[in-house]
Image 1 (cartoon, helix red, strand yellow):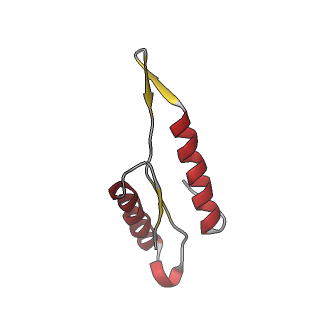
Image 2 (spheres, helix red, strand yellow):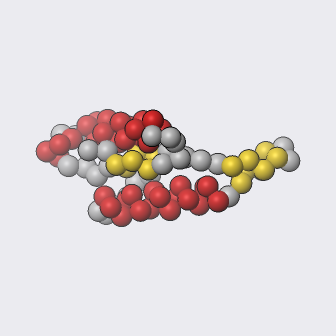
Length: 78
């Protein structure tokens, strides 16, 4: 997800997306299945990240932290 705005707003948008998925059910061959998602969020800081790859690594680490904390979560990367 790309978001042009403050990191706090990006987290809020990610939480809203996560919640929308959580309250809906996916219909698979006649079965209604719950959907969950883990999301990593981060804002680019050229001093911390250096470049896009640095931001990607930080957000990827946040994604794995969200999964490690029990999945179906949003985590912010540094």
